[in-house]
Amino acid sequence: MYDFHADDDWQRSIRDEILVPQFYQKQAIDGRYVLADKGGLATRLQRELGVDTIFQAVTGEMVAIEEKIVRWPGYTYTSFCLETHSCTVPGRESPGWMVHGSADYLLYCFATAEQGLDCHLIELPKLKEWFWLVHERFDTFGPLRSLNRTMGRKVPIVEVYANVPAWQFSLQAAGREVAA
Image (tube, rainbow, N blue to C red; front, side, top):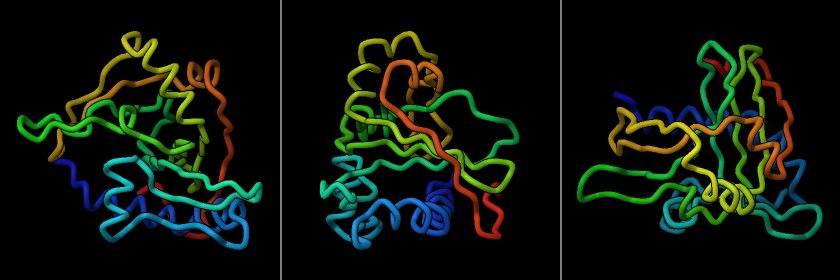
């Protein structure tokens, strides 16, 4: 069975090693960013709003990010997995971040065979608006073999880029393997 806590620890270590120095520290004015990791407010930001990181951009605006970092599976991904149901366990059902997410951007990163991250920064409100108009076209995934039995839709990356403002960039690890 999938171990959420082990995977979450892995994602945070990759975020701290790669995303923090190469993305957040460069995008945030005067180093103003907050990683919503621990505490009551952090839990509420993540569960109720789908926000993992907040930073003050060089433009002066506050930017909220929903992060997804996916392990290298041995092949290149062609789709994003967009979570529509965070939990499908009877009596504990809860909507996924494609329903309740209030972040400004989805930062979806795939670990690569080259020990880096293939990152996609997507305007989340526009993604949600487009997705819910066409979501039935896309294959479902799940329920996952995890504690929450998460479900969602597999949306081709090319479809997202054709319909939603999004930017792709690559970041490299500084000497540590990220594919594990």
